[in-house]
Image (cartoon, rainbow, N blue to C red; front, top):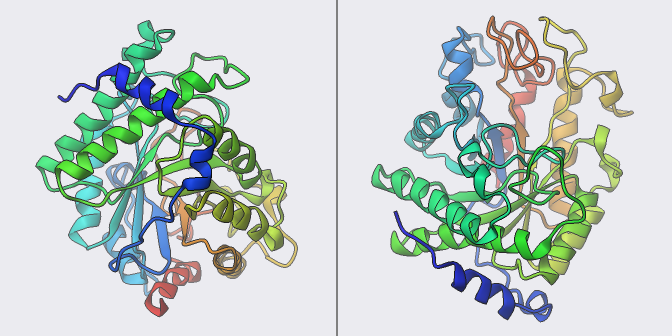
Length: 378
């Protein structure tokens, strides 16, 4: 496994200055990229199928769920990767390999989401992998660890012709990455920049060595947080990335659906990066079919967008319109296939998302699946 010399990372960080943001270049999108990414995060699908879920297309015929999404027009699959999740057999390296192959066999691009944690990483937690815990306060060692892990993972995928088309260096990294249970604020940017830039460098090295274009994305939860985060990141030497990825759930955002284009446009124009909403969802029902409480309740309702499959589709079409108005280039629906099964999460039996999937309670695709048909028009 390739070893990164820590001194080079810190030398790079010291050499960066605030003027780098002004010199950032617009990334060449290349002739093969879609005009707009119509994406789906299908990280749960392998587990749901193992738990007995069978998916049906809109006509009611049972079909491979990846094929259902491909037939509808999905052109990007997002997949999360945990470091060593001993509590589950899914979203680990072997599971992700299986998922990437399913997508690539259908010609669908893949966005690989490194959580750099053994469990969920999000704005409320960025727990360091247990294997690295002894070095929590040793930044130089962690710089090597994150590089070697990222590089080694991608090298393994390359050996099986499964390299992703995009890589997320961290998931919803509003807070500093690789922390203990209690988050530290404010962000220690010397540490955070060194770690993030190390992960980015691993992606760049793999891409160069395998002569493959692999875009780098940095992902922040909620557009309002992207405004301050990318300002601070840019000022602290994090500039070598291609995409600004954002989670946007109106229930938790300061921005209404009708004005979400404002922060997206600001981010795109300020940092000269491509912009994508990589997580969003909207409920199609308020019914809860299992003991696992639904996350999106009536509080998620938006005036003018009924809680129905038709309202869900209208929400997606409006959000796409707002993204495009801002110059953004993609929308990924988070876990549209996390249907209810007899299996359990860490919090309850079933799915906490069964009322926000693009499948009804019989696992038949709803009219909201036709959102992906828009890819045929680009």
